[in-house]
Image (cartoon, rainbow, N blue to C red; front, side):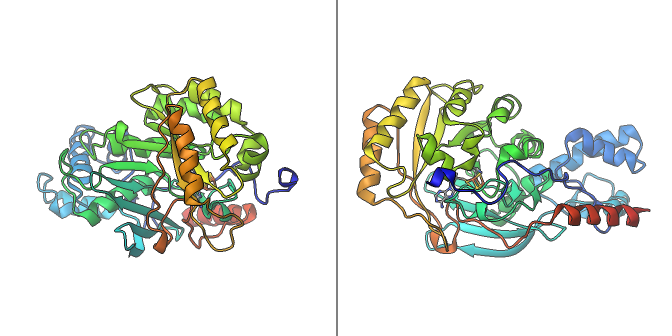
Length: 398
Ligand code: SAH
Ligand code: SF4
């Protein structure tokens, strides 16, 4: 019955404009630009090319290694140049609307972009690591039935500055400037916040390149994980052009159930998805693909499901580990979390087959910061409204 039920909202992404880095005050945000774009921005503003090359290098270091946002603190850049820079450029950060701390130490920030759209990021401290959960979109075009973000309509993609800006803000909050290889609190990044990262591929790629830049934020690609609900056509490119660890939101092993809970499955089915995983560049036993599996009571949590999961992983010879996620509830959801004994039993079956299947400890539930609980008040604008806003902007620019 459920497989035939219509799912509200689009299964496919709606085209959304790429975020502009020019702010309302006409200044350009230097965060989020590639090295070449940074140099070009300076040259376009009238700086002589050789000078632009040098200044771009210095700015890069101050912004991404030292975390400095104020031009007057950039001591190796001539004082006389500070006002010139400040008139034309900013080193931006998303605005923080609220910051919350869970009883377990998890922190959640509600952020606001320059156009007022809101999105969330979460920091999860552990004994041996600290993980920042980064959003890629405001909302999500997909409507996984167990996910709070999925009840939002997509407002828009986040731009590279807004994505890398989350990492910069976390570093600010943790007092972790300058970038240093040892002793950091923020050690790992997961693209598991709001949105489907592979539906915002270019911006996510460009932002992660900045995060991985050795002269800047300097996080290793081995410490970054991108989670997708299964956008098959983009997976190979993600492996080739970003090269981070891959996590796949599998959540079910039969067509009937996955069609229901992850509607994208109607477009890219389980077998197709697993074949794309098998072909993922760089996956091997040292760098396994993580399969995320949310435990929903009486839905996907039987012994048969666990055996079928093992069979599928073996069939495609996947270097895999399974992450069992106890379902995190939110207001109005139709599902319940499986009982702890059921989860343990499911985990045992997979473990006994030689596949690691730890149960993830829910973090930050009390502040709605756990997996699948993120949501902001931003509302999707209609196509007509987006067109009208674009026209207004065009008119304002003359
Ligand atoms: N859009 C991407 C990444 C964001 S979600 C994706 O779907 O993979 C991060 C993980 O949390 C995904 O595996 C997602 O399926 C899972 N998730 C969503 N809602 C959840 C909930 N209510 N409880 C537990 N996990 C959930
Ligand atoms: Fe979007 Fe991921 Fe939530 Fe599905 S689980 S609705 S893809 S954010």
